[in-house]
Image 1 (cartoon, rainbow, N blue to C red):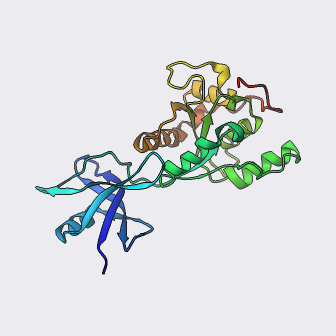
Image 2 (image 1 turned 90 degrees about the horizontal axis):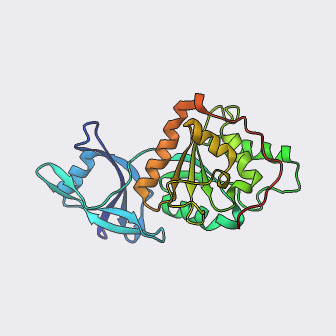
Image 3 (image 1 turned 90 degrees about the vertical axis):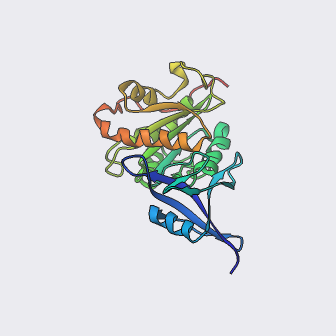
Length: 262
């Protein structure tokens, strides 16, 4: 049999934060990577005792999987030398964005974080713009937003000008769409004039997003390519669903696109 290796991409700790609880790992044999599955800590112990090769697997800046540092086992403890995300369920994320300006970051989101979320969005051309606004809204809600648990808004220079982004935020905050509320995460992209700043111009983000940021429901963060940090942002938004009483969805819906800054 060809040499086999195991690669861990996510792990979680027990409640005491001291020992590993479980990991998500892939086996790699004959140049083929398995589909991956979750294993309890004892699996790591057993594989180590059998002198199997176990390493971290991370993504590089092009979104490609690469071999990371190996796991070592001494005195009953595992060690490794890099940050990896927690072994959590994939959140069902809808990505709301302006197709013309920000497709690069939409694609990059999946490339870097595709194993952390089940993401979807309305791609350019998916919906005929000649349809009525009412029909388009219903289609977005019934076919795209119904099972979403976190809405991620990619904030570029002109995102706040797009009526479809406003409709998507509104649908995600409507309990009747899928019998649930979605968490709400806004990410300032490097193309946004306020990226990297502690302050931002109120008119530079969607009004509905800002209303929910002020209420304490939505969170705003800068775009990051750190997988651990992005997972933390998504979990913050997911957990904020418990604050449903803070949702503000009474902002009048946009009826047309407006002029932007670019």
